[in-house]
Length: 499
Image 1: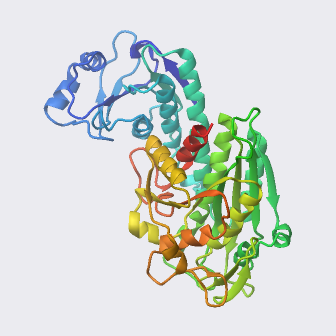
Image 2 (image 1 turned 180 degrees about the horizontal axis):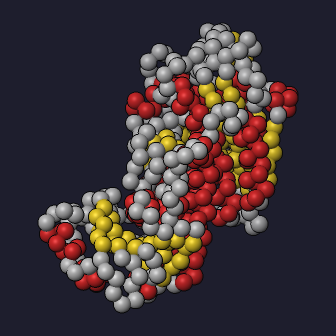
């Protein structure tokens, strides 16, 4: 893929097509739209006057015209971006993605994008490239025919009067983030017979070597020796050994306060049958994406290594398969986590919190002062929030507020659910310290969070339940159906705000 920035007039771009952002209800009165309208013989004016194009978000209209002068393009794509108030910097990502997916279907190989944004040139370039890259991810990796083999290979970003250095920096940044998001999406799309815990660890090691992260993989013997009985109880039913993947990023010069360390912790259940508390057959195939929290950690750490922030970050993924063989945990088993707490397992399908219990405890043992965990933890969060917002809870309101704000900046929505001592009482066990589920049908998402909270001692902690947002059930104008790579942009924003 080739990315170029133009700081002069868009007519300088050598591309097969031009795509331009158009606001809702606007008429071609500014210089750019006036020029484009003239190039197309007034077609833009006609479309708007006839209300055949209104400028609603993700609305498209393709105009064919005879190129004149230095313009090579013979097609112009109008892309609606809604009102100016709605057109935040992160919306450029959807603009670029929508244009790319539309033009790809018409066998366009390159296009010039006119974002018409008031954001900084570097931000506009970043979002444009990021959207261009992520929009071309597809689910068809294992198809032998009928693959989506059309690719747009060239993007020219037109930002008048921008500094070339800003464009170059934004392009590089957008490429790092876009490719890291697709790295995560590729992991989540893998079938479970391919992406076992061992394979996930191998890919993490290869990625770490490529981008310059330190990577350590804890095997079952070491985790058992460290007392991770909660995590290991999930792995006992599988022939695939569990792995704990530990990635470390250390900046050349740190601006973090002494002793401060941010940990990103992810649930990496590479397939979840539910164990002895087995899931219904219908829909179980979707449980290959139960490792999306872990995939998010790996993609975020990849981007961190490339972007080089000035604070240290540790990424931890608990990679485990949940299967129901003769060694599997039974409902009513009692296990001991690495922090010494005993757990009564009443439902083996509430396994994500069991692996995260030891993972967050391990993170704190490694010196983490702030911990953000992410997991496709509960179906309850989908019932509560659908696919538009990620559930968030935590023990530190400032950290929760900061993550919500970071999400707003990047176009990712979060909705806070309460945690309190009253909810914690609902997981008290009669025979152990705690049980892994709460009252049937009540506050399921919160029950998962209060359980994980039991394994955080002094660190500030936030929990992201991405079960509803990590997978898109249908194609969107800017994005394929399937894994979304949710939370990566938010977490990168959090890291960079912490510098």
